[in-house]
Image (cartoon, rainbow, N blue to C red):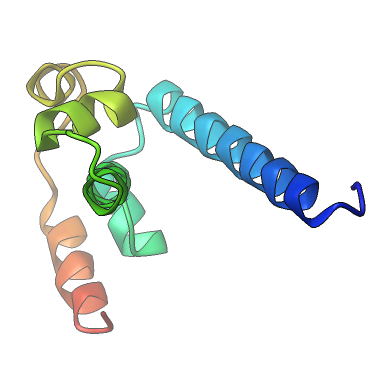
Length: 104
C-alpha cells in the first residue's frame, strides 16, 4: 500500500467495504444456511449484520430504518426472504442456540 497515511486509510476502507460486500453476496447465495445456524456457529447472523449497518448509519446521522438495513443485507425485504428461505428451527438448533447464547 502507499505510504501516505490518508491513502492507507482510504485503501483500507475500500478493502473492508469490498470484503463486506462479498460476505453479504455470499450469504445471499447461501439461503440454505439458516440464521440460527450462523448464530450457533459464529455468534452472528444476517440480522446482526443489518443491525450493525443501522447502528453505523445512526452514528453518522444517516437516516436508515431497520427494514432498509435488512433489505441491504438480505437483498430483498426481510419478510419476503423469510417466506422464501427461512425454515422452522429444529429442537436441536434451538437447544444449541440456548447453549451458545449463554456464552455471549
